[in-house]
Image (cartoon, rainbow, N blue to C red; front, side):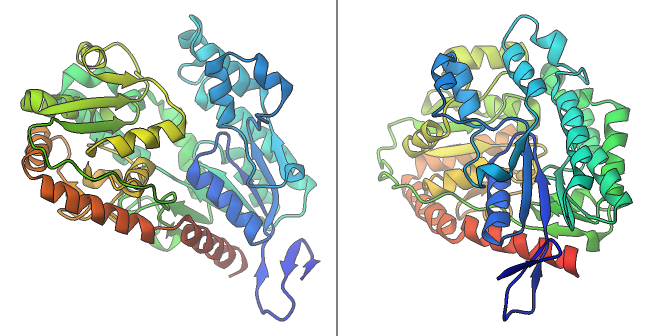
Length: 426
């Protein structure tokens, strides 16, 4: 193996692996596995993120517990430390201010310490780095790629775009219709606050991308008419290692334990879930894991009535999955819900909509049920079926485990690396 012109040449093999700079301000499981893929296939030049944290640092002990948990999620051990760069200050301020009385003032909209403002400043810093290193490709994330791509294009560097969610115009139209249809939850649709400027910013990112990486056929469908189909690469996410599944209780007199994990917003279908739970009464017990976006009488009442956690470490969310009977995620718009794959790895059946991007690994009646969006009655009917038929629940649990066993992150990493190589090297 040897380095030639910024690429890795495997002696005795005809393929060249391109040199890639990857950027992502935060980092979740698909980002970490993409990063790990670059390392495994010896393509990583640098990884840029907002914060890279060392949980063993003496500073860690001085932080409040809440901040310690937030920063713990910013440890990146998937790549060598010398190849990781960070742009921390705006994100540090944002994380500190969010829970303060000044959070709304400092962190909303497109203000400097908002998510959008942080992404843009981060993107600007990464763009300045591009001419300083030998590269064949840059891989950047929705909302944080424009300035990086502009610079890369001027230098003849391949631009790879990660779009983890539905296309913004498709999503905006759907959610605007939802706000009219269901005004009780219209205040829980933060995507409707996105400005025309912000969407035009992302339009240019898409235009400048040589390839668009998406996690599901659902996202591909939302791009129809906006992006040529041959520019899109669909690579499904993977499931975490299997966890032991406790035997399903056959006692139909015990309430069905229902879990929801995600932001308590209407894009995730929270209102439809609460309506379904109300229809079933005492036959179910609900657990909610997710942050409230803003005051809402129905959501606030549910958080008081049922077990609610604003945030939990990932391991504790998985523990809750082991203790639950079914995960319900009735999202109106999603790219590919990682929480669904995590549920399957725990042997937890799911009730999802087609818009969760889960069609590659959830089949109606096998790993759970697929219900139409905006249909609380359909959710209630399926919960009622599982409550009455615990044998079906147990069968779906076994199927969920079996499907998760086939969805390795290793497969994702290999497919992802091959897609990067084919786009960059031709």
